[in-house]
Image 1: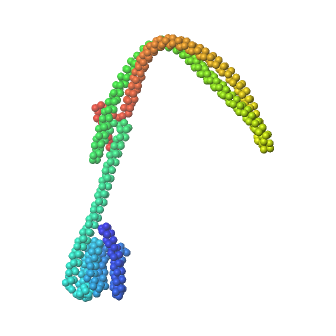
Image 2: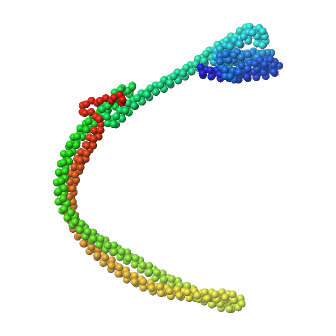
Image 3: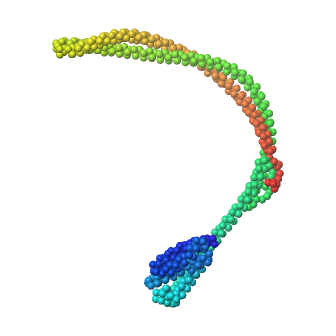
Length: 508
């Protein structure tokens, strides 16, 4: 009922607001029409709705009182409309207020409003008919209005009953949903409890299995479908118990066979070592001889390499000296070109000196007007003389340098010829060393063939010895592994072949 009461309380609050609006309309209309008594009546009517809304009352008495209040507002509207020609139209407010009261979702509110409307129309039709109809008392019209009000009231009563039933049904559905959720929660708790029991039993069995107990079994059945997991775990433990027993038996067989194999391998290894020692002595002598030949061959190869490197160095020195000779020849040619240029500069200085002399003569002829030009001509003549002297000194230096360069070129040519002879001698030495190295290589190849044959024989014997040792070691390892396997299997508490498993006690 909580949802229905909340809906009705909201209806009370809305009707209180509508009541305040109607009272304001009545008060304004009454004061405008000069009928303050009606304004007081409207103010009195609004007190009850406002009180119910303010106090949060939506009980049956408050709802019925509100149902009887709103037709009185319609009655006040009819009284204020007397003589205006709108009194018949204001009858519509009865129907409007009656429909508005359906928000309370209570058929008794509709009934109270209907009774109030009927009493109002019937009483005023005889006492003050002009406050009901513009043409005076009319019982047939009253009955006609009553029929219409009853029809509307009947429909609204059905609507309220349906609405109340709908809200009640929704609340019942919510209660059912809440109960279903509670049942679901209890079912989840039951399943969780069963799962915890199953997990506890499985955990205890797995701990025992981890400790090496293969004979224990889960005897207490698990609830529901969980029991299949118990059966599968018991079957797995039984299969593992048989497997561990078979492994222990086979470990004994492997240890026995590996012991016999190790003894045979030791005998073979002893005989192989004796033969290998004899072959090793022969191989060592051959290896020493081969090493001496290799050292000789390497010495000749080193000598040949050194001779070739010396020849290459001489070739590079010859090329470098040839380059130096060519550079000196270019320097000699450049010196000749510089001499020609200096001669040209000397010629220019001589011509400049002549021009300066001519200019001085012309300046002397000009008298006072040519004194300045005579000074310039003197300076130019002096500069030309200094240029000529410098050119003569440079020519002398170039002549001396050219002589020295020519001497250097001759010495370089002699050095090139000498290095050519050295290169030729180095080439002959390298050819002789190649012949000696070739003969040494052929001798070395023959000894290497002998050494390879001895090495093959020695390796074969060593491989035989190694295989014998490996077989012996493998046998020892196999024996050790078999022993370790037996020790690991011994840590399990398992039944003998064909023996049925024991049961896990209730503590599991």
